[in-house]
Amino acid sequence: MEIEYLCECESTQTKLINDIKSLQKSPPCAIIADSQSFGIGSRANSWDSPRGNLYLSFAIDESELPSDLAPASASIYFAFILVLALRDKGSKIWLKWPNDLYLANRKIAGIITTKINNIYICGIGLNLTNCPNYADCLDIELSRDDIVDLYFKSLSTKPKWKQIFSKYLVEFELSKSFSIHIDDKEVSLNDAKLQSDGSIIINNKRVYSAR
Image (cartoon, rainbow, N blue to C red; front, side):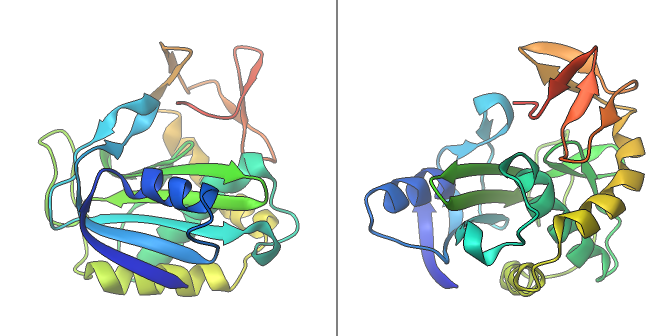
């Protein structure tokens, strides 16, 4: 994985998407920034991005991923691999459907995935030392670079989507205590039913994303 380190950028996700589209970069590659001036959060909101946290975007060709991974499953796949890696180090982190990482009932990270042709571009913002008062920071002491190294090593093992999904299926019950925004409306996940591709059935509608 070729990694570019930046002091600051508008958004690692935006920059990497533009670099891929303009053929300045090709997968596997990643961008890490010390801070972002306009990080991308849920529902196109900005993600608060002070120094001291992890701001990472990476690009990976679909040929380097398991054959049973569908585009609709990618955000959960990338997010839950990070969850499992951090749990192995003692964290109590969990994945709220479909792409937010939590400690108890407080958000500590967000993940966004875009697919351009056969390339997945995944962005991760993880609070390590700084967070707004409604959020939290990672509950174990790991440096930014150690987390990146741990994550890419876990990703390189290419776990099957079926393996990831079977583990996440149990955890999905935690999400039912929360609400998400669908079409700009707040909807409870209490009656949501998780499907094998990572989508949910809620109010007789199949939903793939809360953004």
